[in-house]
Length: 202
Image 1: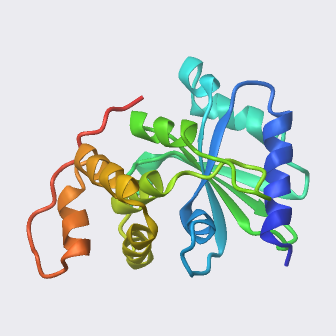
Image 2: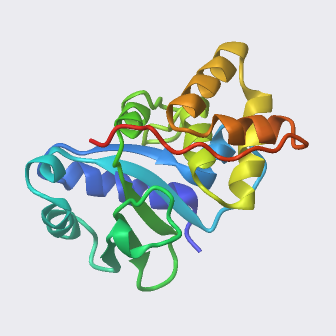
């Protein structure tokens, strides 16, 4: 199995050869690991956006992207409307190595304005060639998800945050309608109905 570093080099090559604007940030389990969360991951996730999506559509972006992917990889686009358990309703591009040596690469196409902010505020970490989403935005992304690991990651991320990062996370949770969920994770005995999302679409 190739290392995560090898997979990141593939991503760097794809984004460099992409013939247009592309914004990308590392999210998901590996981003959590880079921020100090002890966990494993079987894929590597990115939040992605491009002006081509805005000016044309997701299908056009996908067609261009597939021309930038090395031959040994296969890509497939799944529209968010076809994934009933995805709370984001993202369009997702899965990129898989036909030889099975690289981690699967997931491109979640940004749908909300706050996700674009997450990409644009992502920072470089030494040795990582792709910007990594900050702890508050990573926590927000995980608050929107439904898995047990995501909830556990949020709790651990909060324990690693500075006070200002925690305040930013609370504000983001309110903005995306996940403040009750955040409160429940901080005080598991509290119960209450989940508020609906209020985030703005791109």
